[in-house]
Length: 332
Ligand SMILES: Nc1nc2c(ncn2[C@@H]2O[C@H](COP(=O)(O)OP(=O)(O)OP(=O)(O)O)[C@@H](O)[C@H]2O)c(=O)[nH]1
Ligand SMILES: [Mg+2]
Image (cartoon, protein in one colour):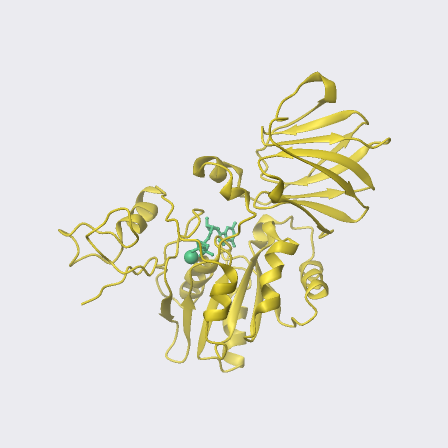
């Protein structure tokens, strides 16, 4: 009989320990989880399964009659992460998550209006934190109100799909059992979760974000870069011909004739150093992008966070890959 890992959905197997679903044959009969999930849950030990779910393949293969809860991680909101929503034909409940990482002073309404302006066909938007259990029950209430009996939870890898389902289980008084982690592709197959006798939710493997910083750094480094607590914005004014170095991963040079005023929304532990451009050549071997940024635009460093630009500016950025840099209308 085929057995599935209750944490990630993979079919359990004892043949190949490099493939998903592996479990030692001695414990196969008793096992609920695969070895990888077991290690994530008990030792926080992570390993990546190279399973690159392509967004359009995924969207075109789901049943269009089943509504979707689409998760967008607020810390990685970009034109790129919003794009897949334009191709979905299913009824969409859009959920902006990891609210606890965005400064409290920002109003939910602002975040909701932002995505509604970008995606004018979306009318159902909720802001939540699965970590803090904020607004999680509202999702449940909406599904019940609309008499939804089956629902997919979809979004990019790491957007927090499995965490949301665990929170829904907890708010229903049940035990959370799905494996969650910062490692890309934690969930490997569809998992059906019967929340109540009338409502089944389907967890799904997240689609790959080709533009995320996670593709360009070691897993351990990536873990350190991710925001873990409410982001405390850091404000810097950089004079012409000066630059700012951020934690050995970003170098921003001011090429404007006036001061460059930037507000950084990244992991609070990153270290910032300002100095004259000519002083050091640090990070100049990385990818280089020349950017002209207008007032009211943000620079997104995909997977890391974003920078609010207070005044029109010309700047040069060096970082791990030019693909991870983009501009968007200001969020905050
Ligand atoms: N601070 C915070 N972290 C969250 C929240 N939701 C999820 N996370 C974290 O984000 C990471 C990814 O969460 P998962 O639930 O595994 O994401 P997923 O979308 O299921 O990812 P895949 O299974 O890889 O597609 C984990 O480290 C979670 O702890 C949240 O609301 N707030
Ligand atoms: Mg998952």
